[in-house]
Structures are given as structure tokens and as C-alpha cells.
Length: 150
Image (cartoon, rainbow, N blue to C red; front, side):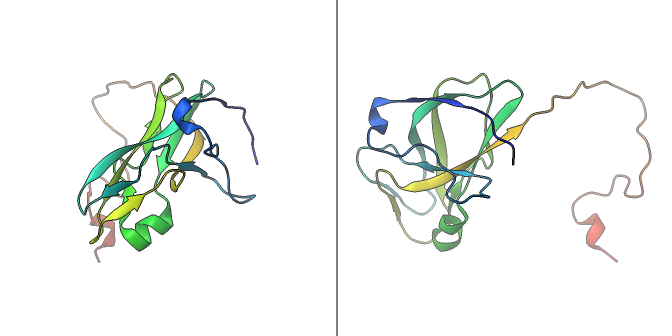
């Protein structure tokens, strides 16, 4: 397992809330907790930007991907709207997570609740070039559903 160092700044409204943490030895995602003063209730179809209470400095060549917690998605229909959300290495603002309630009932998030996870991943940037033809493949230009027929 690879490990990198990431500097975090704890903001005042994160006081008493745990830092992002990997809950098991082989976990890919570190759980994020809600740094809110009062509970936030999401009605079905509603979305909310939930603060985490920290800022961070990712090393160059890395990103943080913010993803849903599978249990919240399964049990309540609550997910990260722009999943995965990307935090670039040069961003220095507070990490916030855009949640949406796709469930049938209201869902309430309380201060300190684990509500999303963050995966740190290496980044590869492409050098785009314009050409007049692309190499052929067996699939060709077959789009949505084209590999599931026949």
C-alpha cells in the first residue's frame, strides 16, 4: 500500500470532529464528516453543499475524489451529486461535498456524521493533438449498448 503525506488545516467549525480517516486497514476511501452546527435535513430531490471543516494541500500529481458512502446510497438514496467530485492539487479552499437525496424520505445529517468518502489518486494529464484519422478497433464507433447486443 502506498502512502503520501497530506497537510490539513482544521477550520474553527471542525472543532471536536474527527479528521478524515480510513476505517479499515485496506480501505481505499477516508471517511469525511459533516462540520455543521445544526442538523441538515434533505427532502427527496433536494441537494446541499455539506462542509467538512478542513482545507488541504495535495501534492502535485494527485487529486482527491469525493465519493458516496455505499451504505447511505443503499439505505437512504443519498449520494454525491457530482460523483466523483474532484479536488485538484492546487485547490486550497474548504472541502465541501454536494449531496443529493434520491430516496423517498427525508434524510437528516448531524454534526460529525460520516457522509462521504475521499480517495486520493494519481493524475495523468494528456497532451491532446488533432489528427485527421483514428486507428481502427473491433468496436469502432459503436456507442451505448453496442457491446451488449447479439
